[in-house]
Length: 105
Image (cartoon, rainbow, N blue to C red; front, side, top):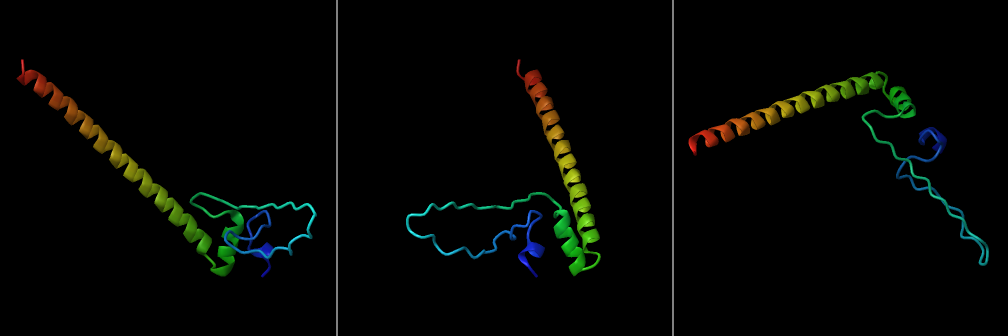
C-alpha cells in the first residue's frame, strides 16, 4: 500500500505516521517548513475510511452505521431522562418552598 491509499482524503499520511524528511539544507540557504495536521471529529468515519473498512471486512460499513444510530438513540433517551429528573427536582423545590411559606408565618 502507498501513503496515498492510507492517508486522509487530501492525500496526507494518516495521523501519527512518521514521514521521512529531506536532509537539512545547506548553510546560508532559506528554509521553509510546513506541517499538515489531519483532524476529524464525529461519530462516523469519512467516506474514504468507510470504504476501506468495507474492503477489509465486508458488511462493516453497515455495522458502523447501525452502531452510530444506536448510540444516537441511547443519547437521546439519556438526555430525555435527565430532563425529567431536572423537572422533578424543580417541582419538589417549588412545593417545598410553598410548604415552608405556609408553615412559618
